[in-house]
Amino acid sequence: MTREKPSSPDRARVSSPDRPGSASWWLARGEPSTRRRRNRMLSLESIADTALRLLDEHGIEAMTMRRLAEDLGCNQSSLYRHVRSRDELTIIVADRAIRLGLRPPPPGLDWRSEAEWLARAFRAFLLGHPSVALLLRGTERLGPNSLQGVEVAVDRFIGAGLSPRHAMAAAGALATLIIGSVQFNLYLDATDPGEQQARQTLYERLDPQTHPRMVRHATDIAGVGSDEEFEFGLKMFLDGIAVAIRGTTGQLDM
Image (cartoon, rainbow, N blue to C red; front, side):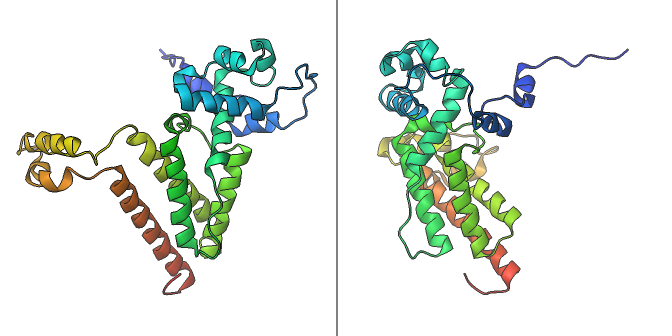
């Protein structure tokens, strides 16, 4: 007797070639549309910019197709001619936000200093726009603005000495470090003295049999926050890249 596999909406969504944000979806959006644009005042840029303003002012819950149409001064049918669903809107807005968050670094930096500058600048942008950070969850960095950022990172890592494949992996790992640092610690502030004291007390009250290190070092670790975690992770990541480059090129330093 064969057992049928249960159907899964998530599995169907992931495997669908039309899933918003997939490569095939972006390719399809790049094809010329045969539909006549009735509202010539409406554009993807204006839609994305208005949605970003809603996010900043009212949070992610406010980014609905109805609210967006109201703020744009159009009806929902006009909006749906540009974006067919909220999922599509999320992908387009996230890609637009990446364009706003990517700033050119100062000239004359070496590969490592430039990576540090770009990582800190983009993280600061996300911390200033927390709802945007939530939108980036699950995105695949395949939109035009995202790909421009990937191009810059891959170019720098190849120029430093990594192979194209490793440069692409490094670019993705760096993006994951930045975005994950923000998403994982969103709205938390470990620098607040009251929060530090509460964490120390929490650690001290743990069972020393199951958490011996946390109980013993509660005073030292209670103040470790997202900034320190990020800087440590960034240093370790770039140290590892530097080692890989030295092993590839035979140079002692880059």
